[in-house]
Image 1 (cartoon, rainbow, N blue to C red):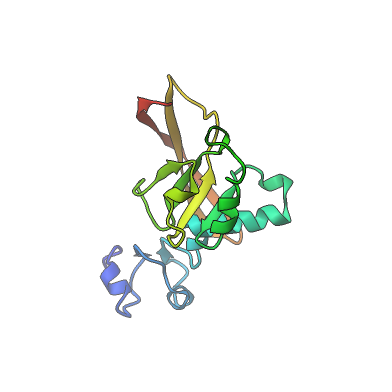
Image 2: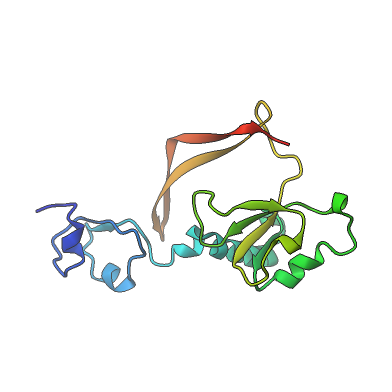
Length: 177
């Protein structure tokens, strides 16, 4: 038996241990799995893994549990919230306008991301996640950075999460302005 043969996992052959998929795994497949079989995606995980769905869910949770959900910036989902986003610029001089980071809702690897303090830089019909940018971000040697922590979500009921002991820090090559 080839434990990694995902070609068999998609053909109806049920003699496999691990099914690796770049896309979501259908609930029908999961319902037919044997107890020892594992998949790399849970149904509905896109609700957390796609930035537009994550933003929508965080905003819903913030409305329900305000104090516990103040850890993320003001967020707009465009195009549906373009009018509300545009209103944040009303009666503000260019110097007093907030700066926003604009991300394509389904993008990855930093492609298509830009900063703006002018709603006219955006096409009101395009799909973006727009967030108010941090005024004074934490810097190391005048460089912006981010930290990546790697976790494995083993199950949601009961919740079992494993945190890898090592992480990754990415640094900008240009000083922050």
